[in-house]
Length: 309
Image (cartoon, rainbow, N blue to C red; front, side, top):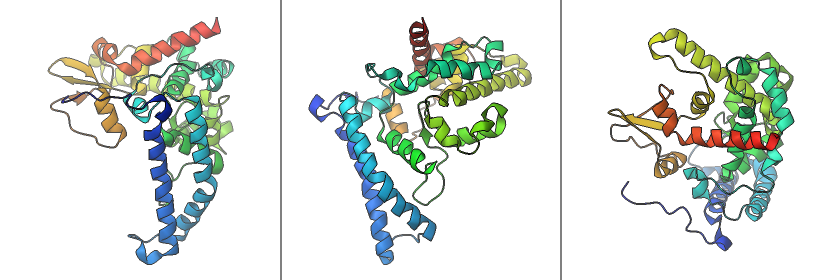
């Protein structure tokens, strides 16, 4: 890369200025939408009555609690900046880091999906996935999306459509995946009436993680059947990699996504890298060995195992 990115330019007293600014940008957008509702002639697009209603409700119920939540979060994680979150840098564990990791709930969820044990996936992986997500949270969008999901049972775009790519809850699972898993696995039928709020609760979120991991195991099984010449071992490292692929290859060389590339991706700038192709599957140990995601999840699993002793 042409230059190094300084992820810690904020002082302790000013930590979080960047991510608070991003949240304020979202609030500004809400105010702008209100302006368009009051003065439709100034709006660049036509807005529907449903959108008007949603925006008014969002401004009334979400904006002020969002700011309060951000302020509370700032006080608890003063050293965590928006850029640190986007680049995947891990903040120091807080004394309360286990608040969203319910070990007994994770054990129950693991037992509900026997496919995991049958393929040697340890129980600690369910809680480890959640712990890893908790350690890397910090984007103001996490706060806003969780708040919206708690208030209205989902997250919506400004045009009123459901935001299926929004990630919510301790496991930061996308709404689209939550609904897909409920439809697919009978073990999740109990959450069918309100699945997104269930994914917010530390006591029930592990069920969605266990289901998601089971689906990943099934995916590798299917791959091995259809591609016998490219069989992939099913183990914690390969399953962790499919959770969030982050390695690229070029001419037999492998590397993980850099901090700057993570930042670009977080900001929506998906630049085409010079000849580097993303590795969607863990086809060899070089891929899993280079993966930052795999390393983080395996480390979180060790922490869970230590906590359980």
